[in-house]
Image 1 (cartoon, rainbow, N blue to C red):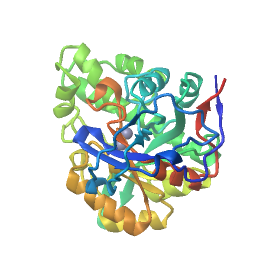
Image 2 (image 1 turned 30 degrees about the vertical axis):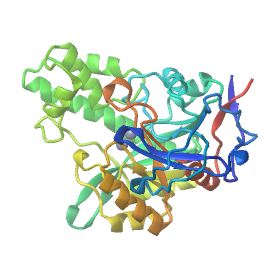
Image 3 (image 1 turned 180 degrees about the horizontal axis):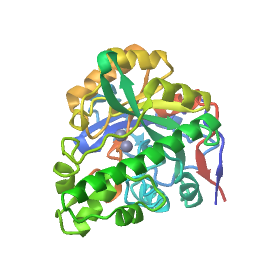
Length: 360
Ligand SMILES: [Zn+2]
Ligand SMILES: [Zn+2]
């Protein structure tokens, strides 16, 4: 059984680890081993391990290496997707996988929905803390009609907030309409994919291009999702239809008003399209942005170093996350992680709800 626990509002004196295993980046900081203890509100993680601390630091993620002989490896992944959007694990499977991957804290952040929260909470294993969140599809609108898409993570906001709910509904419906439009474009060229099958694959979740890709694989049009995304479903494809997105400053206002905390997801993931400049990140910080992903599988080491500096200059909390999508992407749960220090800073800023912990 899972229940809403108490927010850890003070910075826990844990040994910290953050970084990105996927890219070989691992940051370890430590305090005295005698200071290791878990906050009383959270059941002590069973996956805690003790072992030698590497003296290696990681400038890329802003961390400093600690020389202590032992470290408690608290692992926090604040960005994952389930079948409630375009991941392949159900929310229940996802929390079980997170536990199996040795995570202590996992955030479920499906695209434009909170639909997976309840199932994930109900299936929460002992020793794992769940941070309910959503990855909002947003856009920054600049001068002369410039529009740059970006993703904003909102954590621990009130899911019943009326204004935010209305905006979420609008985005979900627009994604469905957009999925249908892409399918119609493909069918107009004789490509054998049906909306019925795509909708079936999406189930109750938000329709995304991976569902269309899966239908294309099933129909034998392409051999893999990667092939579908490289060609027919690419944003450069003639079949592509753009999503309707929320203005990022509206999103910041709504999430903050609903008591949540925010983080800019993969700000330098250029392979997804154009990215905003540092001056836009500064405007977002001034508009209430709390954190920013530094360690993300789509960021190079140079990107991480740059965003780490930007975060330090703007007082943004530096995060690291895998952006796990199950079998839809190669990245594993916990491939990039957030330090407990940053996690505690993030929790200290939220006012609406608390992470969910397992209780007996
Ligand atoms: Zn994203
Ligand atoms: Zn994501």
